[in-house]
Image (tube, rainbow, N blue to C red; front, side):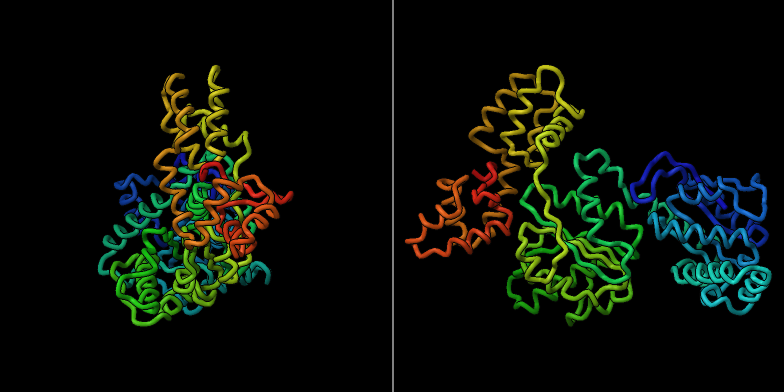
Amino acid sequence: MNSSSSSSSSSSVGTMRYRVFASFHGPDVRKTFLSHLRKQFKDNAITMFDDQGIERSQQISPSLMQAIRESKISIVVLSKNYASSKWCLDELVEILKCKEDLGQIVMTIFYDVDPSDVRKQTREFGSVFKRTCACKSKEESEKWSKALNDVGNIAGEHLLNWDTEANMIEKIARDVLKKLNASQSWDFDGMVGLEAHLREVESLLHLAYVGVKIVGIYGPAGIGKTTIARALQSRLSNRFQLTCFMDNNSKGRCHQSGLDEYGEKLHLQEQFLSKVLNQSGIKICHLGAIKENLSDQKVFIILDDVNNLKQLEALANETTWFGPGSRIVITTENKELLQQHGINNAYHVGFPSNEEALEILSRYSFKQSFPPNGYMELAETITNLCGNLPLGLRVVGSSLFGKEKDEWIYVMQRLKTNLSRDIEDILSVGYERLDESDQILFLHIAVFFNYKDCDLVEAMLAEGNLDVKNWLKILVNKSLIEIYANGKIVMHKSYI
């Protein structure tokens, strides 16, 4: 057993007190392998907990169980006599429970034992295990057997595959450091309203379900869909074998110059598999490559800012492409695109309340959750001018950090006539993705019909032979307008 202290915290594993916890059979490895691993970890600033002061008994001490739960990584060193210890087996059960419930990372080291013998409890390892179970209940024996089967299926380092133990230990230390630094979930701590969004999406993901689920997140540009998706990846990635965030740049343009539709999909799959498998320049010759590579892998994939059905057909056309327990999250401005792909589990990201919007602006402009004395009225006015759009609040709030009142007044006056260039660039994407006829209706609403009744708009435009009702639905699905319960058409003020 070993652990190293850390003051960081993680949303996915609760409060982290330790970086690493190791489960091992002392007589097998303490004076040999473990002592070398301890030295290597010390050289890499990964301090190890000294367990020799803990008294062995029939039950694992509560403090040790707590240490397991409060560790980011557990390393299980499976040696010939590991299963001779009830203590080790109970540790293993708790470690795997933390992996399932809390997303804890579990690493395995097979030290002079074959993974197959651990999984099936055969040969010498199996004989040792059977002796341990001899005086135990059937329920306890089955619980340990399942734990050994599960841990034997976790790919790890196998001593027989290495030329020297020293080289293996160096590799283990590098892997531990990489995993410790892989997730920075605290980057999202304190983001206003984020926890509520994450709870909603996690309920749709139904993480306990053993099948594959595809979930959508939709809403207007600048509302925070990408932030929610990145926070989800940071929080949940430890529960999956592979994880990948495909943003709009990494997906590339769906229409590649000189490629037909089949060639475009091949190109997208090559980019996707290169990123998921962390292997640059993967080349494929058929569209079954994703299923061939990932159908036995539990993956967490985010496809961000999807705007074309062909992207979904190329990258997530069938749930059978991915292994049991996989989750695919798609963010888009276009609700209709999700419906066309048969994705009914979708979360709509709404605008923050006035109170939340004011807090977002304050966090960026004052580094606190509310405006200081003398700035409340100005902050409320600017929040309203940004239309409670999180992107606008972030951009404008950052620009006002450390500024005096006269500069706040200048920005307030400018916002009444012009948006920030950063905000304009992002909002214009939704308009540019519309067909020409949809753009015409969009402009009509922006100029003449904002806050007007649907029936009035349909009557006013009826003579132009326009299918106004269908076009309004398109603009709603693409998160460019809303139609309130009273029939009023509302376009966000950032577009006007």
